[in-house]
Each structure stands twice: as structure tokens, then as C-alpha cells.
Length: 146
Image 1 (cartoon, one colour):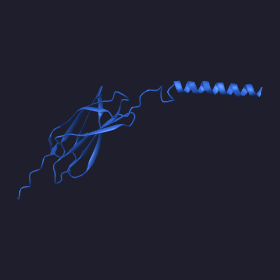
Image 2 (tube, helix red, strand yellow; image 1 turned 30 degrees about the horizontal axis):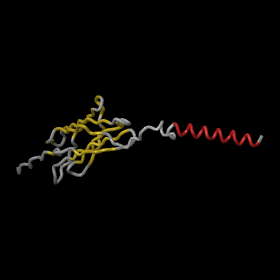
Image 3 (cartoon, helix red, strand yellow; image 1 turned 60 degrees about the vertical axis):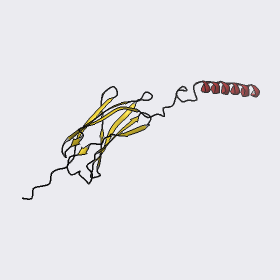
Image 4 (cartoon, one colour; image 1 turned 135 degrees about the horizontal axis):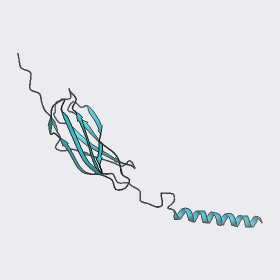
């Protein structure tokens, strides 16, 4: 009787092992793993010259055919060195946009505003792209001497 229990357990274990092997080892049915970041198909920033207190707008087309797009943001670095991150809103399938006001007192030695798009998919794969040519901060004329 003990001998039969041993074989029953062995057969059950073999059936379980065969079943697990056929399902892809628990990895979602043997599907492919998403290791690729989203694709940035288009990225624009307007205007190319802006004053402190002015408004800028970024638009992008971002897709991810594997797991889907989780988030799209723009990181803005001002000439003063300060940074801000803005979430982009999904307008339609693959199209994202956002707009923001330029803070005051962000001028610096350079007048370049660096705008970087950051896209992340549902699996955490990320890609970024800096917009070129970089927008510029308009210099204020000097105060009159009187």
C-alpha cells in the first residue's frame, strides 16, 4: 500500500510539472517581455522666444505597442538653473500636450531654456528627448539711467 502512494504522488508531481511547463512557467502564458521604451514620434515646443511671465506649450506624439504609455512629462530647466516638471495631458490616442507659465526671475548667464520630454511605459521603460533648437528667454532691456 505504501508503495502505491509513492507512485501516485510521483504521477501527480509529473502531471503538475508538465502543466506548469506548458503555461510558460508562470510568466503570463509565455508571452514576450516588454524591454523597449515608448517611441517619441513627434515633439514640439512653442514659442521659440519667450519672456518671463509668458506662456509655453509642448506637444508630443508618443506610442508604446507593447505595454502602453504610462506617463509623458516635460522637464524644463531655466537659465537660472531652476527646474520644473509638468505632466502632459493625453489629448487623443498617442497625442499629449501641456502648457505652463514662465516664472519670473529665471534669467541667468545663458538665455537657453532646456525642455526635455520624458515618456515611461507601463513596465517602467523610459526614454527622454531634449527639444532642439532650445527655446530662448528674451532678455529685458536695461533700465533707463534716469
